[in-house]
Length: 63
Image (cartoon, rainbow, N blue to C red):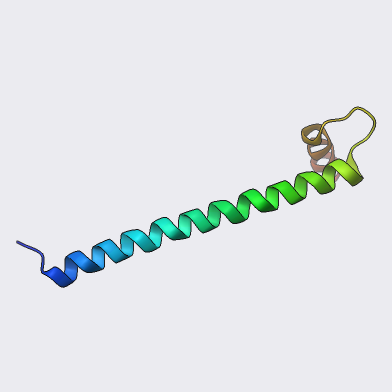
């Protein structure tokens, strides 16, 4: 059964909204991770420890 013009337009709009949401979500997560890493690097790392090692240590100390 053929779709009407309105149904096709609605599908295109829904697809575009979903794509835009994914882009916004990814941007927010990336920026948060960048801020989190800067905080861990500045305040939670010990001498010679990497950010990943500090995060792992903190997870083990505070489950």
